[in-house]
Length: 463
Length: 70
Image 1 (cartoon, rainbow over the protein chains, first blue to last red):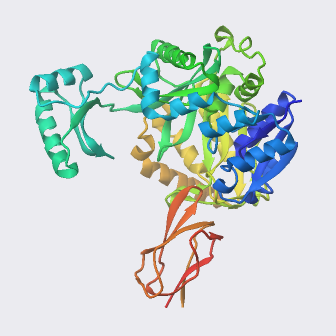
Image 2: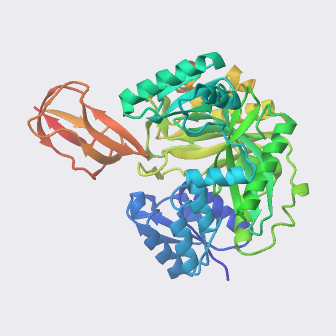
Image 3: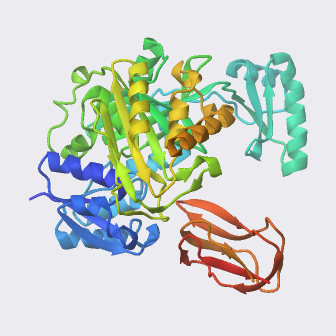
């Protein structure tokens, strides 16, 4: 008899419960003191209290989660994303308690969580990394050769620097020696260490990632890619599948090396390889591998028709997933765009806005999927992530999907808390978004117009 | 007596002033943690701290008095 405990809360806990129910597996929710009236507690077949409102007392409390699992007789734990999802120690403790952790093996989590090791594994699997030099010597010819190998423009960086300090942009080879000398001199004064190195400079950077699924036996498939360039303070805001504007050749190569990497670590279940995509050079470089289900997995599900979470659970149970998920059977059709609704106030410097939901209205529209843990009358607690709802739209074309998403966002009503709903509409209807001129600096570059647009539409709505 | 209140629900992470400290308008007096973000709570008036009501680690609702000024 199988039983799945979900070690998470909010929209992802609800999403996992529904996936488990769709394949006939009983579910157990865990909840903190702050989540007694939360939707995931109501949806699950059973629920167990695991501790105080602070995450470390409850959702991060390994002891309490494992105790709850043993008490209810759960043989599976799905960690969702965040909290214990990429915690190798927890995955290991599950295994030792005889509970299947829905995710990759602890050693894979550990290896991918270590930047240096992850990069080495990527290189070994043939995944391109951002070209860079070792510490430069004083030898001018060597410096010129290092520059030529990396290509221009490049950055000269101080080894001891960080956060943009001790960094210099060099556009042409003839300026390199002077830049190295100057950066090294500055580094000596600022950090007491003059060591510098060079790294390729990406003028227009996009965040593109590939969804993979591994079968644990050295075989893996990909489920195409997503663009998640629109970010604020390194938090993704808009995601879409597939990534627009990639050449077929780039797309195929990115997928191929991603499958190689997943296969080389005998990856189990759903994972994501993140890349920095250089839109000018049309090249991509490894950033990291996320060893969990991603927030934005839904856009991939919409275009491929694959239920990734159900597949994760079935694979964890040792059932055959590989036949249904053969590479030739996975096709993408249409275009999907997702907007993340955060409980925050864009016109007040994006201050968080926890509180009681006094009113909630979510339209049912063909082609629109809404994943949320919100329910009218419940409280959005101040203790956790501000992301409260994901709104996804599937259209035949990118522009259809954007139109549908915009219309869905305008019809969604969330009362009692401030949200970024109007800001999201301002983003997706911005001409530069519509023409897919994406970059990770999109929101900073258009900050003032987006805020003005969002503020005026929310005032119109109030009037 | 002037009161500095919490602008939103959250957890009191750091208290930056003690009784007797002078406070200028706009000075950060408390840092709140809400939805995984650090939110500085700024003084909305000036004066001298007469009472620190909140304690680090307290869970507070919106409009909870954190600090009182003369």
